[in-house]
Length: 396
Image (cartoon, rainbow, N blue to C red):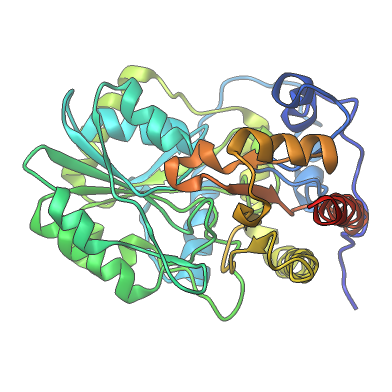
């Protein structure tokens, strides 16, 4: 019998939830179910909230350091779940992976240097490079016959030059849902070692991986990999606690750590807020069982979405997913331009998705759907989508 219930979730309509509050601005209407930004419409686990309530019994909320026990809880989690070992001295607090990435861009490259991004990919990967006046080196992923993606190593090798200093790795990949195999990662490692390229590995979705797939931290590949890797990890996605604004960066190599520290300290990341420390530690200490049940629930949602799309194979396909709770929908069969495709989901389906084109040119004709929602809400989504697809099919 399941201990946790994901059939319903708390209403967020009257809160400041970004997913809901920005509907009018992003979609031109509030009359859409929002399935875009990557947080869950699933209640944050009770053991996290109880720990925060207990801390609130103390009447002073002042400046605090991230307690060693919080980092140690995360370190133990990473060791047990993912087979990678970090030390306390490797760890930095960060309020977000995007902030960590921007600090890494500043620390490990200079203006005019090339930074590798593997498209289609999470939009801040582009923005961070451009805003820091670096050059985007696009290494598009290669789509295979089954719709899944892999690295295009030949393309990567052909584009690298002496100005290429950093590779931004999405692992597991957002939005295409790949959990990279060891042999794939080792080929990236080989190239980066040869050309003295630092790897910033965004592993924020590492806990959200479906069997039989296994997340392999880039830093765990070898000692040489540890020496060139900056790993961004956190509990925000895993336990739906992004609003606590806490993640971490692990840098085992002392020279890289020193470079990162200079930028980090100049920005003044500080130590976050008191309640986030407590929530972070509670999640890693008590979250194993909750996470296992959550992943079962998420994969059911994904399978229901896949089964619906299989009714309309000429119109829409779900790219096979291995990790994350973000479905990458191939909508090219609808024969709509990107703007029209977005409007189709808003006006015909009443769903607010992320436009594939926002993840790079390679995302044209695709949409990203966040299926980390309750069973009740998933039923609504599927019903809306089916009606819209029926209408489109009948019209055409």
